[in-house]
Length: 157
Image (cartoon, helix red, strand yellow):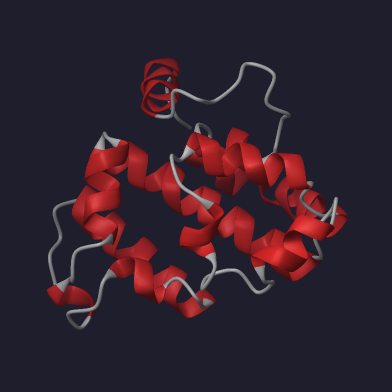
């Protein structure tokens, strides 16, 4: 479980996180990523009911990105997402994967900029591919997440 100081540090790294952020929303998960293993049932429930468009927009703002940057990662096109108020299970799950990964990355790299830079830099451990380019599948998310954990614990492959 993350300490209060660590949670505060992560919230500072995502300065756009609102105090009104709904519990268990994708934006909430960014600053509670260390708690995620014990919250899986709640997160599954949120995925099944679908991520609201407003929660997606808030997440994008909090991680300092644009929807366009995630176009190749999401299972739905940006134009079809703009037409919906609540996303289907597949899209909702990918949004939570993004949230969890960014929360972990912000925690390990201690900066949004450093983490985003790492995502865009080819990694020898990932076959000289940019980590961000692997995020279009669950296996890719797993590879990137594992690499972040290796960095966190100074275990290089």
